[in-house]
Length: 458
Image 1 (cartoon, one colour):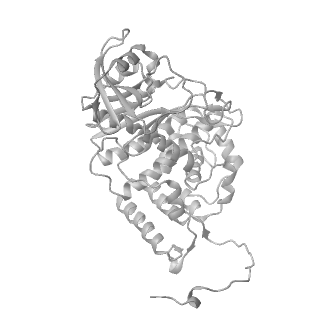
Image 2 (tube, helix red, strand yellow):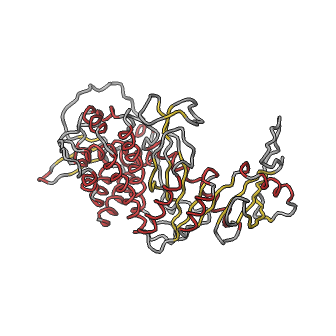
Image 3 (cartoon, helix red, strand yellow):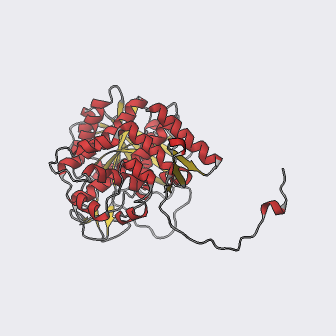
């Protein structure tokens, strides 16, 4: 039905008077869905067990501060000081199970008292929540990707150091090594390190621990892993092979001069598609004990390179192609291996989403343990935002070659705009607690869908 202009347009001249009153108003009505999720996974009690070994029991325990950090990051805040903007929000208070939110000084003081045993328990809980989701979904294959990511700080945080930092040269930073799950786009675990270490520092022990934990808790699942050239060495590859993990790893040309010669002497390449071609061989570096399957790949450039050239002593140069080498113990076709390895770029999207949406890149404190707790809280906030979508949507029925996420995930920032950041009022008509919101049909449909799914799952 067509509307007239008078039904559409009007004039507003008067500016309303502003008045502030103590009312049961909330800016985060959609946070109700996370209250249901926290209840389902019993998050508060499990956080409390992480710090049960501590003898001192303050009013605002360590578990409450960590839970508040997770909520704080889910709401989109990045600085601890910003807790003042929602400390009287009734939905946040109900989610926390508190009548009062702790002051910023209390939060900072509690974080400064964090210690290694509690942090290890928190890491274990974060990993356990991810494993429970994987056990529920029963994936036949689990793909674990490993890579480091720089977390920069402007100050002199304890345990940070000046290292390689492409974005902020000369800044002090941490350089944690992350393990992510490709199928769910979640963080499985992390190994915290200062910013001046190589990517492979402590990697072998951390990777072994991740594989052992995944194998012991995900019975029957085939474990896969993808790595960049920083992890390419005999110790790592042998360790992965002994644990029956299928892997691919990029090979650095500068480590073995023979690789360049093998590429330059090659005349016949097998075509994968219009862009990619390959050849493969079983090869053993002189200092290694056993041979592996090496796949040599070239990618056709869309545009010819122009300008001055700096030729490399180790990498083959061609104006028409880019080259790389992948080592693997997978027995599938070369095309499947190449697609599988190229899919590891999805891990960068996980890092990007977590840094933008849950402040993974923020270093808020000067104390090392406090910053580790904040980083784990950011990981958990990201993982929970994925978990709530996994529960509410069906996954893709089959695994794909590049092992992308099994769901079409929305970014947490999108969920905030569409659902979480909705104004509402808590009222008690006839003694029944009710959350009243504006009658937007799209919001109503999405919010009720999450509520119904989570209530069934509980």
